[in-house]
Image (cartoon, rainbow, N blue to C red; front, side, top):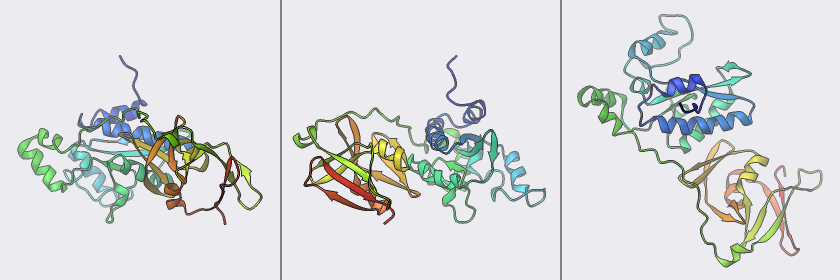
Amino acid sequence: MPTPEFEKRSEKNLATLRPKAQPHFRALLRTLKTYAASKGLEAKIISANRTWAEQDALFAKGRTTEGPKVTNARGGQSNHNYQIAVDIGLFKDGKYLPESVHYKKMGPLGEALGLEWGGRWSDFPDTPHYQIKTNKRISVLRELVRTDGWSALDALIPAFAATPEPTPTPTPAPVLLPDTVEIFLDRGEGAKKLSLDAWFVESRIWVAIRDWADFFGGTLVEKNGKFSLLLSGQSTPIPTQVIAGHTAARFADINAVLGWNFSFDGAIRPRKFTIHPDS
């Protein structure tokens, strides 16, 4: 038998979802595990499909049974009851964290993958929750399954397109032999040269986006050959091109979110680019 991709709990919950929905949530868990690992945490799928009776039991919490309120949905009123939703749990050294700032920070990563995130709900924000975006009210889903069966619901689940390996495309002559740029960081204590690849192409600074995210923070999400970068709580589409074998993005596109000050000396060779994030 093939080796399971994830740990037992996540795999067990994934298996309860609609088959057409499972690839979407596998992609989600891969992305969130990468983010969580960078924070010393582990992400798991702790809940997926629920029976109506299980949903009613959760609804009773904080109402007719002990504990805090955890949902406003009765049986049949949650996307969990239709095998198209999951809840993510974060763990530290094996201990479950019911609260963490990282639940909110991870939300845009799921949205970048095309999922609906419960943290955007105004009436009952649910930051660990992700679901297939059907653009249908829950009452419509309930009636659809009742009258037309599960195949009608499956028709609302987008087909999952696996991310292809980016194929480098021929680049204009200036990009084949770009001018290198040395990047310096100055936080008020003198400029320090960084080991980050950067280039000057058509009057723009381009940086190796994966190295940038690793050094300055942020999470890179790739879907269908397109990239988004989670910066300052925002998931921002980033146009890229391949330069010298690296996936590169314009610093201007990144800095549209960060708003850092910088200076550039294009008269010397190699060109010198200094970032002043704290000024």
